[in-house]
Image (cartoon, rainbow, N blue to C red):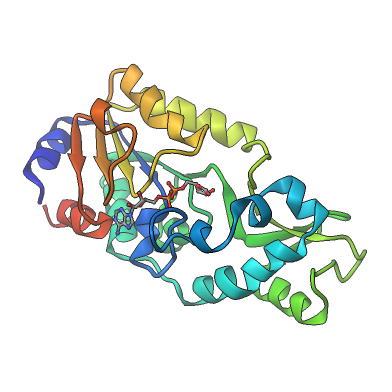
Length: 243
Ligand code: APR
């Protein structure tokens, strides 16, 4: 186990974890930024912007068909996700704030998960509100592109927060509360560039928590952190499990 992280954990009584795409990278889910990031191939202004979604949803649904669906079909939680489950079971990890929309924390068994950006495994009709699962939406896509609701022909949209949309108010409020309450904040696998999610480490730090950043690349918050570990999330977190 990483010694400095071990020392910080042994002194902590209220740990909050904050995760980004990097924790799911080892489950085969591509990150957004960086060389292999999906936003290098798909322009987020077209594929992830709410205004553009309603103007021409076919872009998003191509992305769903080519990237999201096949990846989510295959992905399962990795050692990093499982280690956070153990930390919660031990009673040390009180909340897990995630920007991820892949549902892998819940699949691993984490319970108090605050999804700031929604979950792409659930899809809703914008007309009548009927909810569709991943496979059902994929099946609708075989019928028509972009897919509409089998009941009312309303447009289907994933239950995720696209650029230009507000974050779910209650989840954001609870995430801010948890960030204020913790004495150790672990930011794992996030570039920390997307607001307001990226304000959580700052809130924690301003409230007196120790801040640890585990990420493969530099982040804008590294200078404010008590500890920066540039290693893979699963390596660092499974160290916690073993320690
Ligand atoms: N372990 C740790 N970190 C990793 C790993 C790994 N195995 N693999 C990649 N990383 C790091 C990368 O170095 C990168 O800095 O994870 C970070 C992922 O950054 P982003 O792709 O920007 O993902 P994230 O921070 O979650 O993005 C925030 O942006 O477009 C949106 O809504 C989307 O929720 C997402 C938000």
